[in-house]
Length: 379
Image 1 (spheres, one colour):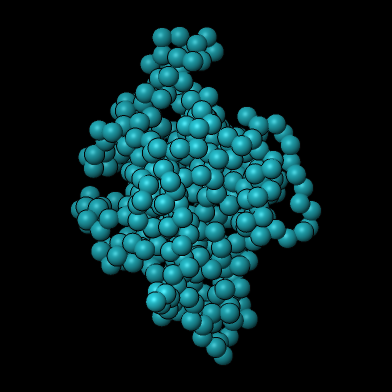
Image 2 (cartoon, helix red, strand yellow):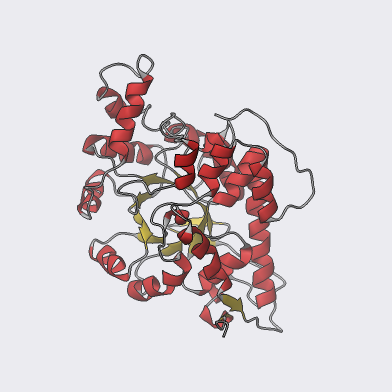
């Protein structure tokens, strides 16, 4: 864990880039690199951001935008904006309160919080911070079926209202900066909140965790990667819970078709923020194609690369019903804990509302592709 140090930014406004730069000066280099960097030579990471610059907003005028409403309903829950907290594990590497602080911020803003399997705190501890607020559980399908079942059932009993099955991580991507830094926060125990509190996981250990923590971490690593997992995992999850199942990590139209065949409840177009496959497609570039396959049969959300309110607008215009935001709130967490998270997310929300008004839209249902113009390539 990092030390309990917070840098107060006061009332001065920070741009998203400044939040990142100042967070870099607060936490250790290896922790910052783990959060901010991507896989390989970071082609996917950079493509995610570049894709948003490929579209310009064509605004409409003389529209009544005196009242901007960003509220929506998602899986039967009313939320204040089409923005969710992306699942990010090991959050105590940014701030000692980790997921406890970021989940409280999400609850205060009435935005869904997606908790990672490898969170620093357990799903029950995080649920205790959020009361009745919307929360989903992101599942890395364990190499041990009983552990996977246990985590799913624990999430349901703790008030998580959806299971987000991450499908783009059968093995870990090559994150060069982590190799250079010789750093693995999961290996060091910063992502064991859910494993170490799981009774089935505990039963797999020869000794109690307090007596042999290293062996417990070794067992967690053994179960975390699961290269043999297939589409049949969806059927098994259905046996364990009636909660909606979303697939996170869909970028190929053929996988979107299979998702319909397997009757999942939602898709998250994601490339893991550029942290898995290098030289992968940018999520915004494939969003419209995924939506064309789905044809409104289930919600499609966009993850990876969202930094500004205008990004949210563009994603919705291309067919997403909502977006997930990750790294920006982690920079806020590093700088100011719960307060920093809220400031960053409120800033993006305010930018989104301003973009809506200036584009001539007052509700998110009005946002569509007619508001976007692709940039012409340089000759």
